[in-house]
Length: 252
Image (tube, rainbow, N blue to C red):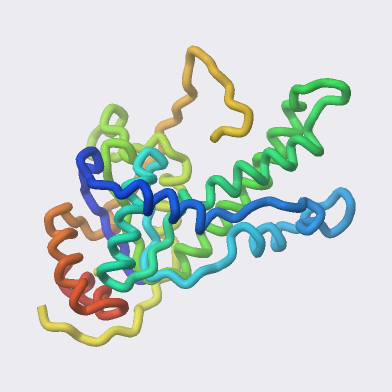
C-alpha cells in the first residue's frame, strides 16, 4: 500500500445498474464444490488451500473498503472505475458469499450435534474463528499488495450515534480491521509518471441485535469529497490505468 483516501459519499441517491452489479457479484464469487479438495487429510483443512481456492490474490489498483449495506453502490463505483478509467478495483464484499458457503459446508459436516438438527455451540465458534481468520489474512494480503485504499465513509460505515469527541466509530468489525491494518501496513511507493496538477448461515431471528462499536481511524487517510471524487473520475477517464492513479495522488 502506498496511500489511502477517506471518501465522504452519500450512497442513498447513488445510481446503481443492478443488472451489471448482480453480474459482477456472480462473476467474482467462488463456490465451495468439494470440501475434500481443501483438506490435508480426512479431518484437517489446509488454510493455504482455502486461500487459494476462495480468495486467490488478484492484481488490483484500488482496495475499496465499505459497509455491507453499501455493497451495491461499492460495486457500481468499481464498475465505473473499471469501465471509464481502466482501473481494477477489489471489492471485499464479493467474497462474503464464499465465506458463508464454506462455513455452512463445514458446520453441516463437523458441527452438528449427533441426531439433532442444531449445531454444537463450541464447535460452531471454533469453525467461525478459523474461517474468519483466513478471511482476515486474505483481506490484509490484498491491502498490502494494492497501491491505493479508498474507504467509503457513509452513514452506514460510520456510526454517528457512537462517534464522540471526534473519534469515529464503526459497528463493522471488518471495517475496523481494514482501517487499523491500513495504519500499520508497510508503505511502498508506487512507480509513477509525474502529471502536472487517484447471509448469515442459518438465520436467527431475535428481538435484540448485538452491536459493538469499534474504533474507525481515518486520520491517516486523505479526505475526498464526493464532488471532487466525481471530478477526478471524469479527468481520469481520459488517462486510464496507472496514469489515472497518478492523477489521484497529484490532485489530493
